[in-house]
Amino acid sequence: MDSPVVKQQMLIRRPIAEVFEAFVDPAITTKFWFTKSTGRLEPGKRVRWEWEMYGVSADVTVKAVEPLRRISIEWDNPPVAVEWKFTPYTGHATMVEISSSGFRGADNEVVAQALDSMGGFSFLLAAAKALLEHNTLLTLVADHNPEAHKKQE
Image (tube, rainbow, N blue to C red):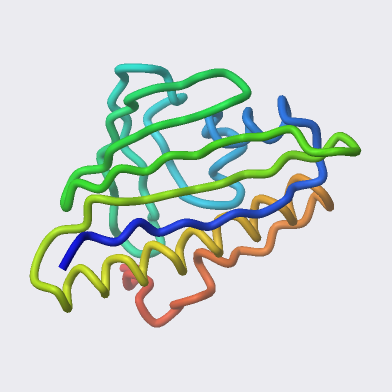
């Protein structure tokens, strides 16, 4: 089986500079996706993203950052390539497209990874849209699986 490419997109009705910044600046991204980051996305940089409520993290290598156009990363364990494309849209809006690829393993594992990626990026885009358009924190990433939250000691 060929490894699938997962694609998601969402129109965010905010200027491209504001939308792009929300994805490279962890002070903003932590409001709608991960809860902690070791730094801003910059070409060649390695950062760690944490989802503290789940007790998980991802090490990310930033492959490319083209201001106001594109972000390309690879996360470890398992290595998956992720790319965001930002396109200006009429009325000061921005189309955000996310693709992820490079899933590995047995066929059933690849399918599970692709479906998980699709669901996760759907939550990410919806939460980003709510924050940037309406200044509303939806907590979609945390609330989609509250039983999986790590136990507080």
